[in-house]
Image (tube, rainbow, N blue to C red; front, side):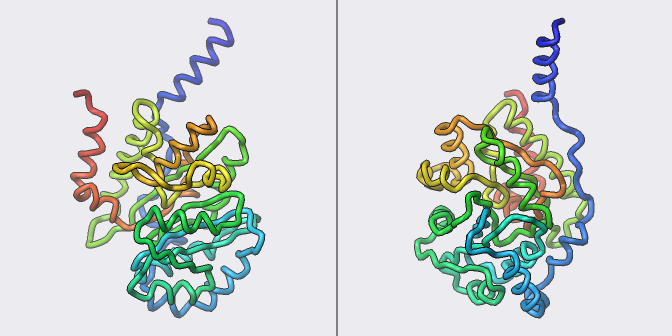
Length: 289
């Protein structure tokens, strides 16, 4: 076998082989627990959060973090508190899009000093488009208002975009247990999810792995493909990835490191019908018919 053939074989093997080196936390890390506190406790830390966000924010940002929020009074301070603890040398702006919240969401955002804009058209696509339209950074980081972010998340997610051949980046997630579900059960579910992402990439459509709470792209390219607008029956985040790939002929990049793993509520599991139904659905997608 020639050296070229060996290199091609090795590349094909790595493409097809599931990466068992993906490391996950069986317990919730302390840097996540710090922010996973009731809003009453985090409100008491508002001065500290506001000062950190002020130091992080720039009027000429490299990176814009855009967060849609609808009635997220119980969660938004967790998200902003975690982002305030970000460790990065890049200039950043944090934009929260208040999508007609009827609770204290807007008040709590303003308490932290993060930029808060109102989008009166209801819906996640309208909210994400509104944030993109006012963002000033070269790179857009998509986040959600019910998710807690690790300190190195910004740099881990944006650095692959420094390579011109990468069009969109997506990352990992873990679940914070609610209603008494033991964390080890979620731990197993997340490895099933990792296998599902690998199978989607190799055998199906990688774009379905892209979630709006942990992904990144270039602002100008996003604007050139009609932002987050998408056909009925598709999701705004994955469809944006498809549009970017088709127009600019670039690749997706999966950030699997635990340093970029975000921690979120179990809403997405409930959408799948609960933990066990969700696990079965993920496995069933990859079984031969």
